[in-house]
View (cartoon, rainbow, N blue to C red):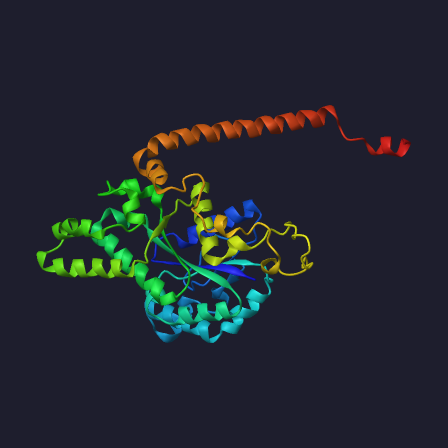
Length: 354
């Protein structure tokens, strides 16, 4: 059974950087991963791409041929992809059955909030058997301004309701948040979307009093749905990427897929030749899989300490640790080289004499 992520978000939120970081992480962990670029305007792809929409259609060609602007041309490209979905389906089937795919979407937010082409493409992917989750990236600096934070909440809520997928909202670039000033509240206030009425005074101070009722109406709308929450992401931090991966694996159900080397319980039918998602899993304990996430910096308070309260101290500490790790690697390499010099491999003449 194939799994995947639909990576969406506004321009500059870090979608392509996230896909590249995820590819590096999974490669290091030995997990299979493939990245599909569905952005026809992306002509400088940083990550290894197995399927690129530019081989089907490009935004530049659409704008020149039909006289459309960037937004209209992007909508046309998505409609064209929907009409030629068999092109994408054939290339996905070539990747095999047990695959994990990142679908990198364009940055136009209307594609994931209003326009129906991406929504219908996602439904076609689920009919092919894909277990998908939407990963919606939002730049973390928006939480430093109350009005921007409310707009991000509304955008995230609209995306959740439109795509109709298991959904993970992510505050990306959290490692840069301290550059934009102090937060009015602790970070967990924003990630857990706590009592938004506390933002009323801040909103009233920055906007005209005539918008007070509108502000409270938007806050009430968000709280009535009670759907939006955020994970955090610092793409260059390994612990941050791993914690986010665990949250996504729970959303897609990948957490219940047994390892390839797991042994079946006694008395079960031998299904060693079945796909990975169909094999018996001796480790799929639901209480463990869906329990609280545990690990380094899995608690938002630890994230605040690392990236906001004591960022400089942590940066200094990690640089020292990286230096020590580098020295250990060099010592191991030198030791291995010394051993090879002391015990050279037998020459071909020695082998012939024997």
